[in-house]
Length: 155
Image (cartoon, rainbow, N blue to C red; front, side, top):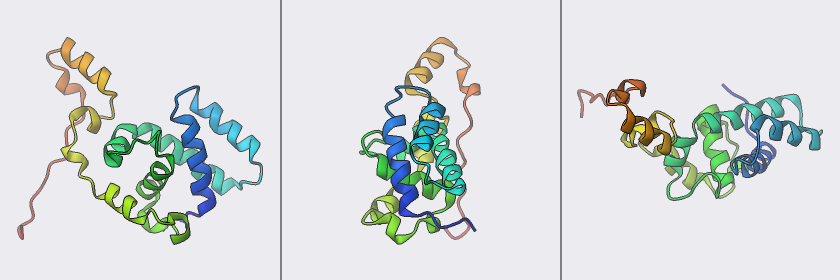
């Protein structure tokens, strides 16, 4: 079981994502600057913040899909909460960290990502996906396969 995610971590991750998701500079530099300007953060919190920040960047397309109609750059707190729930497990979020966002987080976690376009499930920017598929007739082989939906015997 992972450690409890506190409101301090959520608040700092919200600040980090608000800066990083503007894509104004290298994420690692921005994370490092954030840590230098917040020396009170412990090593566990720093590790969790860095890990979750890069989790968001690696899974930006599916996170954006889950947050619709909101967008991670315009809703960094919701993005932080959903990313932490995906990376650490929803039970890791303390009630105080969730504040009044429990329903929004639950709704985002319930979104069926397998119904998303291939560019989303492949975590490829849509502009790049369109460019590659237009140029190469066999580009489908480049993208990961969608998870199959298996029906249970009961339904």
